Image (cartoon, rainbow, N blue to C red):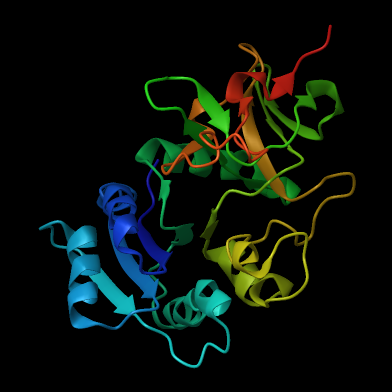
Length: 272
């Protein structure tokens, strides 16, 4: 299963030490679709810094990359929202774009993640649900994975869920933040023409809300959000292909932060 043409938007508030994250996530960009269009939104228009960004993305490869430095933002936090203007233009001008992805500059997404999402959309779309990802972190020197955004564990039988087969279902977790969104053309139309495209009050702050996509739009009754995560019912574990790496690992390593402390394999509890 492949995406034909993918528009990617990345917000990069320029910090020299974070170029390495941008460089790492960009290694996967050409692999995510048959054709990719990459748009970087940054606060800097210095020539050398723009060159650093371009080199981090291209890495000597032939890629279609544009760097945008928006002006008249009104507030620095609105940098994360500047991708909407470009996505609107692309949506109207290029009918061949089949999917749109917005992602923060430190979220590592692989072709396996894309395959999972495409399969999940087939399973969920008739119910108005959207397949989603779960961010993880890991300690240096350890292979154990920790949920980046979860404060609490969940009991399986209390979670809203949608059965796909005898051995697989999708669950609606209480903390749906994923630091990105991926939408097909139909869902993107809904996003661009609905309340999710406007910076307004939500459960999240303004910068985080820019990555919400349709998370809180047309949420089914009894659900926390529209986002559902794949779950292997037979082996009683979250689908590993739904996991995306928050590569700084800055929550799991900080004892003063509550996030990043629950192991992925202990996030969903089965009782009985």
